Length: 131
Image 1 (tube, rainbow, N blue to C red):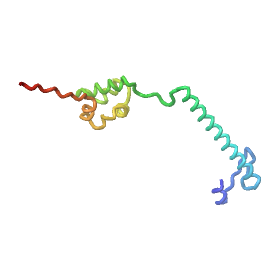
Image 2 (tube, helix red, strand yellow):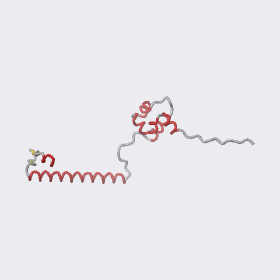
Image 3 (cartoon, rainbow, N blue to C red):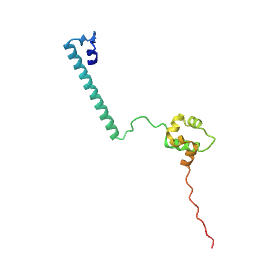
Image 4 (cartoon, rainbow, N blue to C red):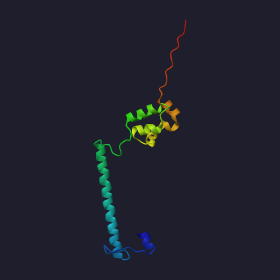
């Protein structure tokens, strides 16, 4: 409002009979604004207290995960096979391609990086010396 006042613009509400071109009108406007800010802060505080209480009870907040651990393992297994595409796996699991890329981050480096990340390193075989 102060920016508008500096430019010579006043606000007149016909419904509430509020006119910011007068000192009394500005006072009432600022009181209403202060009350609105106070109420908003009370709502934010109450919301944060409620979220903290829910967390303390062990409630899971936010959007549920798009894929379960089992689905992620299944996607990794399917991606290890060269005939499967990300699109076909996404359709099979009922998620988007983007979700597959988000849950299998090593896929961003290509299938080779995925194969290296999912393969188990082979242990060296003991050598037998013939005496």
